[in-house]
Length: 341
Image (cartoon, rainbow, N blue to C red; front, side, top):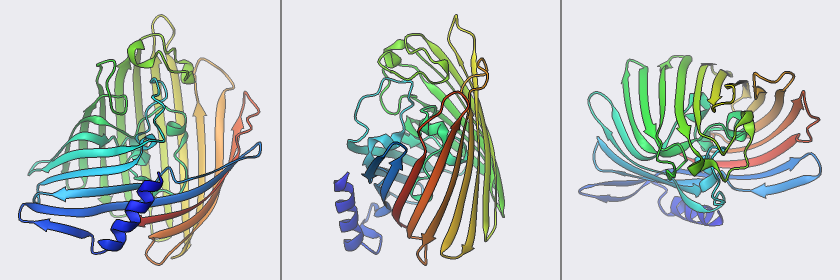
């Protein structure tokens, strides 16, 4: 991971004009540089330093319609769903994204290692967030990036995106495809909304090596997954409020259908240009077949930003409450985020 920081800082220093090479057939640009240094402490005297969310992206623009983009970082940024057999390479350095894009009169086509953009949070890059990812990703229920093909159509702020992808974060051991779709409206002054849906299936070829047991999942049986999320965001100069609710089901014959749901509310208040207060509430019910299994997380934080928001220092504390278990999972995270642009 240290290689990203060294290479990224060197590129930024050498090519601060962003455009660092131009040919008659196109243009290379440093599309993103994100360095996040964190110190995370957990209940039970556990602590860890890390830069795992850092990344470096480069784009090649052939013309106004054709683009290629690659992003380097730790492979854990793909966020491979937990129910798949894990390859143990999360801390290895590699391609986090890598796709070709064509923008036409009626829409946009992408193919390669794509961001899936499920819900509001899934559309946010690591450089745009100050909190850890929500329980949807922490619990391994959803991936952030995958190999596939996407089609997006938009008109006057309304958009539709359809994605067909492997489901496994990169490879496709079980040769089964997943489908993700998004609908919504953005750029509507101070309000936006969206709906995301995902469906797919697995078999033991890709899951038998998994020790994940969330939502009653059996890794040695075939499964069908259905998930959907609706979200709304309202923002102003001082406030930024996001509300999202996710429902899903896992079907594994002959077991009964396991239904689950998650919800979260984010409230950010910018007291001044350089200070932001952070609040988040999360709830997670892992099974509608089990009573008294609701897990909740309360988070509170504070961030200070530079003049243009390129540098931010923050601290976020989270309290975990579980109805079934007395979890020792409270956390405190302090970090320094640098990003460009």
